[in-house]
Length: 70
Image 1 (tube, rainbow, N blue to C red):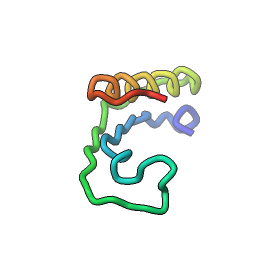
Image 2: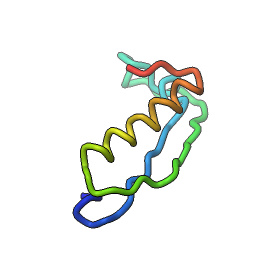
Image 3: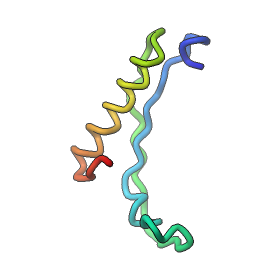
Image 4: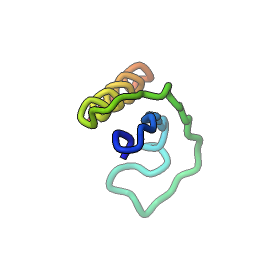
């Protein structure tokens, strides 16, 4: 959609969600906090490249903050 409209893609990373709702325990919601990181916009007209760049920004942020990327 971004490539068709010329809108930038804005990657967003959420940190700490795994503690709130652990894998395999989706029916249980724990209290806690989540950190939201809004990254710089990525512009372009190649959908594959935009997706790849957004994924890389998010993955790098997760690794930087001590979260493994699955």
